[in-house]
Image 1 (cartoon, protein in one colour):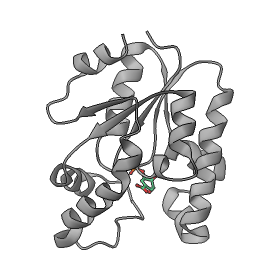
Image 2 (cartoon, helix red, strand yellow):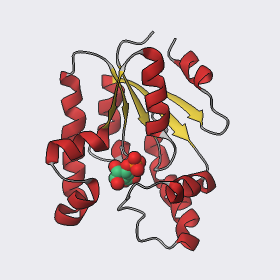
Image 3 (spheres, protein in one colour):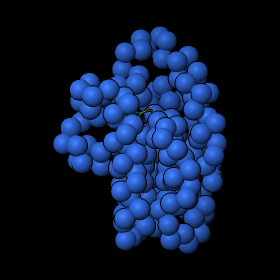
Length: 169
Ligand code: S3P
């Protein structure tokens, strides 16, 4: 079994928090949602940080929150934000701190999950619904070179916990 952090990475709506919690429960690890950690540290919601200080400041806070995880005594499962691996050398940082798992999903599935979710996501908030799938397809293409640096990748289509657990045996 791994004794380092496990980072879940992938585009918004791919299920990082859902699968992260499930893996953490099954391995008896702590679960940390990086966005929630940033919100706690800053005393502001993610949309508020974007609105008040802009994306560049958010990315800085995101890197600082990620770095703070190296001080944890116990390994944890961490769900990251969709953009975390794509800024500030974070992909190298996560690969050095633990195991990284990329959750792949199609633009159609990502769109459905984003629309179903109650989370406010500043990056896609202003994209009209009829343009969302194309936007995601293009944006995902830009982000793939970062996501593909993960140690492990799985397609979320038909994914089950038993398959995921096998990856960390
Ligand atoms: C972002 C994804 C969000 C959050 C922020 C920026 C992105 O996290 O970190 O709104 O750039 O893809 P989720 O992937 O959990 O929605």
